[in-house]
Image (cartoon, rainbow, N blue to C red):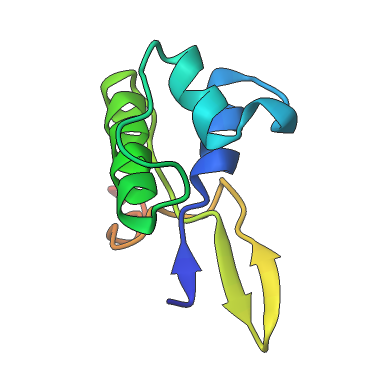
Length: 96
């Protein structure tokens, strides 16, 4: 993957919480959820991250790609960038 959504960044920006409150267990706890499964199990962590993403979408968050790799370097993607897969904005047409 060369582009992805860093859920910790999205969560922190959307709910206006500092970076130290974006650990997986803290995010779940702040949303009133319990951790399901075994901690540090890749499958269980993924399921819990998906639960957070679903909740964020329900709360009105627009999840966008916010990180990418370019020439071997980790880069932040601007939140002003168009949505992935979204059509380019149409230019207004004026009548003469």
